[in-house]
Image 1 (cartoon, rainbow, N blue to C red):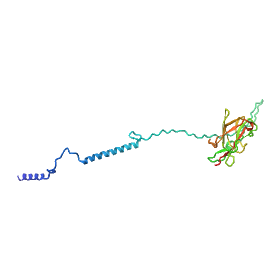
Image 2 (image 1 turned 135 degrees about the vertical axis):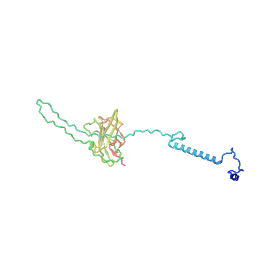
Image 3 (image 1 turned 90 degrees about the vertical axis):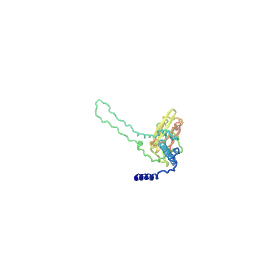
Image 4 (image 1 turned 120 degrees about the vertical axis):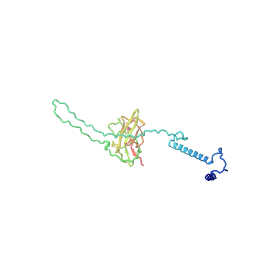
Length: 264
């Protein structure tokens, strides 16, 4: 009996240590959740929205033309490449060769071996042998004051009136002759097109650095239909195209035009 009483006493002592006191208010199942839970839910939503916005910005940055970009960049027009004209070099005039007659053997009744003279090359001065003057990169030329001048044909006196052409000299800014400058003429005499090319220094009959270009087999009248211009070996202009008149008189079938380098 004593043992059973002790066990009962122990149980009464255990009841004194109840976790919840008897006067604690009962739990209400309809009570709203605690405020801490609501704040946690709102924080989670804010983090999710931040990640979503960051993802959208990353997609727009990597793919600016994507559909989610409200302000896509303007599409630039396609680049069209056009060819750039480059100057075409004019060939230097070929050297002039003097033909040499080659005697041919003639048949005889009694053929006997004979020595046939061999042709020999005659040295002539070509454009390659002309001494050229070093000019500045930006050098340009104008017509010397007092030109053009008209006179009778004295450069080819044998042709007389059966010739019309333009002659002249190319001079630097100190009045010294300049060789190796291409001289070009063009235009029309009536319905005949005129297109010629020579080089200064090829004709010294009119002076050093001189040139001579035949325009026609006879004097012809024209007003501002023929031009003359200086160009370099790359076909780049060294002067303007200078238009001049021509006459149908034999006393004016030679037109002289001198060019002088423009003073810097």
